[in-house]
Image 1 (tube, rainbow, N blue to C red):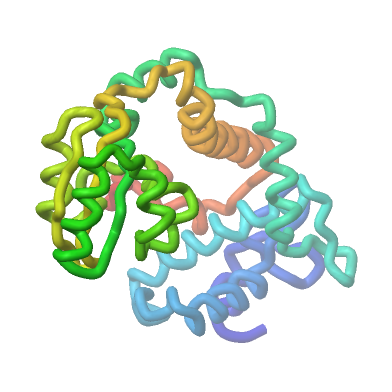
Image 2: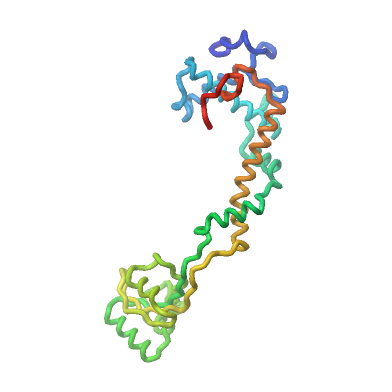
Amino acid sequence: MKGAARRYSQSLPVRGDAPFVATVGGQPISVARLDARLAEVRRGPRGRHLPPDGGSASVNVRRWIVQELVTEEILAQETGSVGTHGESARPSPMAIARLVDRVTGSVTPPESDVQGYYERNPDLYRRPEVRRVRHVLVADAAAAQGVARRLEAGEAMEDVARAVSTDSGSRKGGGYLGDVRRGELAGSLEDALFGAEVGAIIGPCETEHGWHIARVEAVITESTAPLAEVRGAIEADLRVVVRGRAFDEWLEERRRALAKVEPEFAHPADPIHGVPSHRH
């Protein structure tokens, strides 16, 4: 017996010839398993945050690792995870996900939480003003003036766009740009569109893409999506929170029912160690 295992061998209970720091459902967690996990943690990314082994601060590190091993053992037993020698093995993420579904599958957020979230977060459900726009894009000012004259003469913008617009994305649709919101177009063109009445011809306006002649087809005013429309999305977001809380509560209940940790390795905040010095 080497290292930490020798230091604890006289004060800890023994199963066979191996001292252990905790049991979960009768399954011991040995000092050797604790030492192996601590060495693994020190080699990993968490190791840089740990105090040197052997000092007073390292005692709490071992207590934290024991808590981790206890939780892992509870999950292993609840998921039926078995290693190559019949001992508990670390459960896979898929096995844990199935356990979470089994424990919390019926948990849903209460209606009051859904309503409260909706009322506290109006900005999330605010719909900005939308302008439905049709345009003709050409390469220079002279061509833009030509488009304006054709429209003044009564030619349909849809026909002009199909004939001369250089915007390949909207040309086949008769120049239809779709729904435009503030911040989606360039300066003077956007300002003109959001200051115009429905049906008004705008331009020519120059942007980095060329010269535009545009028309506002319709205005959809700013509004807030009704709760009935967004309820599903809110419930989905809140369900993650309430299911996580429910699983934590279930896990704590299983810990009380299954786990027995030796006093020397109890949780750092356990009253057995005196007044807790850490805060969550």
